[in-house]
Length: 228
Image (cartoon, rainbow, N blue to C red):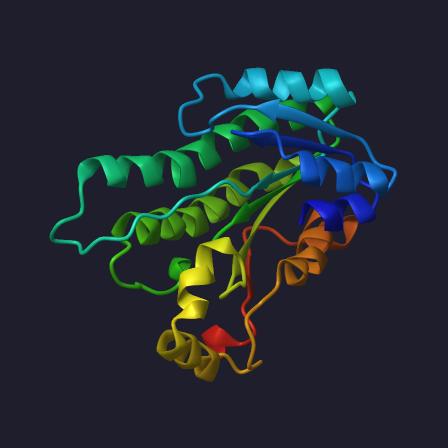
């Protein structure tokens, strides 16, 4: 998504636990600027400070993509409070408070802006063995609607993207399990795992003026998974 936005003409501020040198180099190679802010959003108590750093580096903020997230897998009967809190803190709490800080900046700038949250198939489905993840991503869908309701009148569009099964490091174990991999592919009408590049078009669209009249919508990018 970062590269898609850079290709569309965006300068990028990346907030990460570790500086993403490879991503930064790719953005710079596209002729755009990249500024790294090193922070752990699950522990961050000064979201406004992060926004101030972004504004100091770039002059303004126009788009926020809430893409940070983790998952913990255990049966609901044995799921721990620490795993619950870790997921909720990053996947939901940080989404709200960073959105709040950025929306305040949008209002100061007086020109609106775009907030794009990253939801999940488990914003729509229950799943198994991922109680805090399902709760957090269901919360992201609801929060997206709530914030859209409150901020649309100020020119702030809040929407979300729900990726389907993507071929990433997080799904490597599933793809290497022949039985699970086959079961997943049989469920996806497109017949393949998604690739990160499949998210580029949707994020650029929702970040653009083409989406000015879209508010509170969660767009599934899933190869037809939810249509089954």
